[in-house]
Image (cartoon, rainbow, N blue to C red; front, side, top):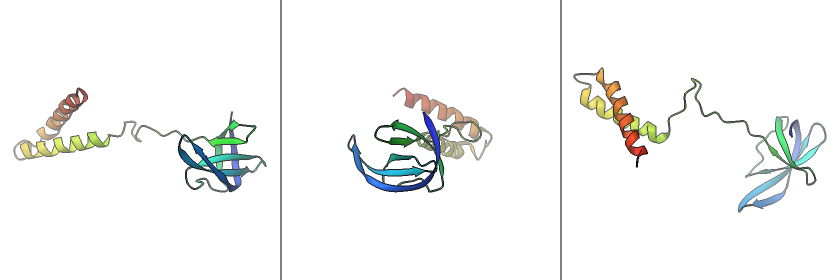
Length: 127
């Protein structure tokens, strides 16, 4: 069950190693008086006074974890951001088409770039 609470204090509470990864353990006190143990890689990243959403993972041992805000896979305009590889490939196609067509047929640059990009993506996906 998800809970929401305002952090009023936190303090270091040891360390834990889980699956070979070292974590710092923190005892976090909320405005309602409840205390829960949270893990963090490195320093505690939440601030006193911050209202957070968390999930109790083990009530007996007082263990809890913060619920991360979902990351969007889309830009503000509703499209997916280009991967680094796609961006590089598109830039190379555009540059070559600018060199080939810009002096005589600048209108062809974008359409040829799109065709070349799609063709190269298909070749790469079939490798």
